[in-house]
Image (cartoon, rainbow over all chains, first blue to last red; front, side, top):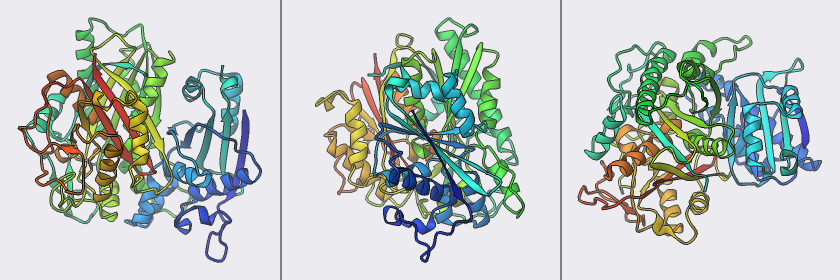
Length: 170
Length: 384
């Protein structure tokens, strides 16, 4: 099992002047919402550092879905470019683009604030938690990619990833 | 094969507050949509789009949670009363997992109160309130109720069914209740209107004159269990996403084809008697779906869809299509594309437009789905 986390500063500017290194991978990269930008940054960083291995299934886990994008759409009502991001699975599409990957994607919205640390504890303890049961039931190499609408005190958005292998799921 | 049995299903749609009303509308070619005026919602919207609102509902739209609660209560009680009577069993010694498929839940109750403030926004959860409602409604029927929310846009129901199959086949749960629930308020309506995908005439999927989709509301539920309970099964499911475009499916049909091919018996497309396509009525989606059917060598199989009758019910749409498939298999009656007059000549599949086109025997149905975020999915159902 490989566990990664990445902190994306919400003050980071993505613009023509400050074009991200991953820009070529994402069509209309300049329109991305903040969560999607954070996901692209994190995946770019992890790919560069060989943190992401091949996987067969992607679990895209968002706490509270697309909260930030929902509010952004209302503020800019009714902007079609903003509306697209109000679907909670959109970040997974950008993950597919960043990783040049296609396959089964399960986009799951968690009600509780299942932050990265508690997720780790649950997995290590092999506790009876439904999401973990589902991942284990498939017994495949999985990438679990997570985000949260909550920012840390530095104003950073956390993106986390857990990679599983079938043998550890036995 | 990841076969699970369907124990029962129920829904409330624009056709009425039960499954039979929905199927009657499909059989009799009834389009339940109305044109939205600018004062339909408590927030001004661009008028002219078509929406199929829940029928026979006298509650005000000031609280979507109240609407959801009232309808869920009716749908779930109807479903479980019928199932318990049919299988001569109550579930008081069983546990159940709820898999909720919804794109935006009760977003309208939260988001408008929030956006005006420049201060730290109050976080909202448009799904958990629904999950709690469902858990509360099932608490007196089951010993333990677990729950999970799936948001794969308009393919959410298909993904939820795939999850249900995994949970049952790996014995994580004995029973899974898949619930598809989405309501239409100004947030959703105006979002789709801004994308210019709503029809201004009528929704006519696969027609040469098709000009967009109509939205719809639905609360639907399908109870599944291990093999051997019922005479109709969900035999297989497949989901596949790609990042080609976030708002369009893979236009060459290859991604949806992959899901179809992975659930059909190899080189045996004749195993499908009827296809219920996603059929939104938008030019891109219908073309992509047709391509997928062509690549899957399914151009001879009769194809229809449901959205011309009850609208595009978003996260619930796949489950509504599965409920239609259930009635097709049980009643051995097919339906046609109600509003479609002239099939687009660029399309290849065998779209049903005339009531004369009844299929004699239907043993298996393929249900396809597409969603924003590059989501593609297929489910197969069979009479056992």
